[in-house]
Image (cartoon, rainbow, N blue to C red; front, side):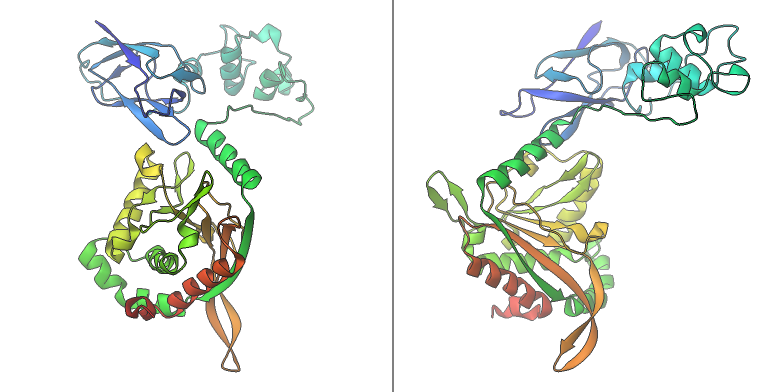
Length: 391
């Protein structure tokens, strides 16, 4: 019995997806509920499980192609697991291409066709007679096979290659939203720096007890989220948005946290961050990070958000100007911590310093509000007890 593999419904606003990697090849057996194909939308990436034990008999949509919700992208023939056969490991790249790659060079040509060239020629349907070899003794190299259809490559030992890859739906949406933000909002960025000594001291003092009690490491992000919520409570314009001709103010704080995922940067939302403890925040961030790397963040977790925090410091950034995620009105950029000389009480001392950047929509937020908000974040990070005392 053949079963259709269809694109499932993934949200009311999504009508099509892009085919990602097929985790199984045609002719291969798959186990029920094992992941067989990856689908990408403009918000997230997810996998389609096998509805039953069986063999992939046909793949209709290759990696990179678009498919509508409900469209058939392949067929699965019901079959029991063959004796001694393990569940297939995830494949890299499109299944059909992977199946064709190991094809050998034509009979009698193996003595002058290098293995890498043979794979390329098999993919292109070429024979040794089609390709001029430039290797020793006229052997056909990979560069020769690739150059057959690429005039930018030559046989003089210099090879220039271009690879055209379709933009993923997530990358397309990121591009659209960044252009939208710069085109429709009046964006400005204000900067400050924070002495991280107090936070680092607290973290060092309690990290072992924290890990033992909550089974998660105490990081810097929970301190920043607490400081941001404190600042947003004092300056609600930065947590507001424009909706038509109205300004929408909120008494809750849904903070987007930018995390690196398997398909790039995603921004899951910490709902009602004002109600979360340090442990709650660290547990949720840790969970987001793990699931982002496995492309398991759901669409609902990426939607909404009233303010965003992004940490370029984990990648080595010293200073940047983050872009607001519409319709939000503010985004805080964290950066790398560096020991620098600073003047304190008339003396030069070395302190662990971090630059902070707040980009804001000037249509909603005045310069004064942006500056004092960032100053408040700085103050409570340098004296965390101020958050507890609400002063």
